[in-house]
Image 1 (cartoon, protein in one colour):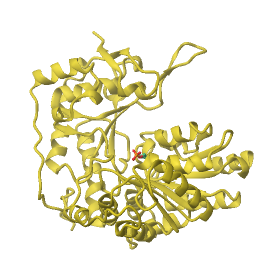
Image 2 (tube, helix red, strand yellow; image 1 turned 135 degrees about the horizontal axis):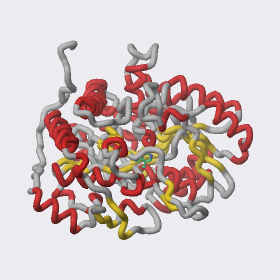
Image 3 (cartoon, protein in one colour; image 1 turned 180 degrees about the horizontal axis):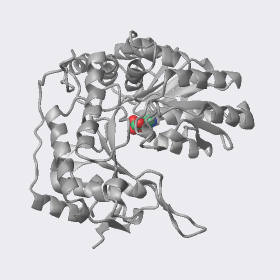
Length: 461
Ligand SMILES: *Cc1c(COP(=O)(O)O)cnc(C)c1O
């Protein structure tokens, strides 16, 4: 279909949810009330919500219909066997253990694997994954290649792990101190960039050489498989499902937040081959999440996940999904807005320090942009920059800022249409006209951990 110049929605709409644009005066007052922190805004006062792609998907008519069928038996629910069958078909591992979301799956796995003084390597740990390693007094090590942090590098598969660094790391630490290696697909903390099949294979070979198990953090495996199909030689005629199956064949298990590529609002799981580890996880599950055939979820949730996983690997859906992200990145680029390139699978990342080059890092340009975007257009996005990751060095007393100062525009799955994307791009074009007038911020209140969620800010005059 060569005439297709934009990602047409491969669905029509059967239920709608009203959204309403507030007035500029209302938004000004709301911003003041919440201390210029968009996390604290009531969601109904947000016109387009790009805060996250997690748990924000629209479910299909088929998913809703499976929810009615959900079997709510305490044990041996039919819905569990459906869930298990679909996950086995895609992932190919023997055991399937449900959990209420991704971080619960991570906690189960790391409670069993991580002891004080052990190390987990990952391309880049997602923040909950890192926290679940560190709370067990393990050390979370990121081994991505440098390209991940370069927003201009034209390389594809910037989510890859650096295989040489992994080899050196495993040689130095030894298998006794590394209970597993993880690979996050797509690499959420590096702009949602995919990992290539060649890289997964190479990582797997190194892990096998040192006899260390390889697990996937599989939240966005379908988007990752779609990129492989688009970009990697030899995969154009394979289905996304076949590509996903091949990816997982190189590992020993996976954790997944179903709130991403399984197209549901809650849920997750661990799936793995190791019998004795699976038994240990099920015992932990019973203490904290529930019986192994529901794991903190209702039977209806298991049905929605099983159905959503199959819809998530549908090529028409993925063409539109990844196409939307790419299309928005193109609209912004055309309007002269600097973005991370190439765009990843689930979000467009605006390079806020370049867009607001008149603001020093100490005045948090990405935060300033998040406020300006809401003020201008009622759009909410997520700062991934100095407020989220900056800290004061105890020795020098100087502020240390992360390498990238980003505003993430995460696209919820199947929620917004093409005209919403145009609205977002127009809002940015408007901001570009008056970028010099956008002011920086200073922190007036911060919590000791994860300060971005609750920080209160003040505009620098
Ligand atoms: C969202 C996410 C998680 C955690 O999942 P939750 O469902 O939010 O608990 C873990 N890893 C990655 C890569 C994620 O994107």
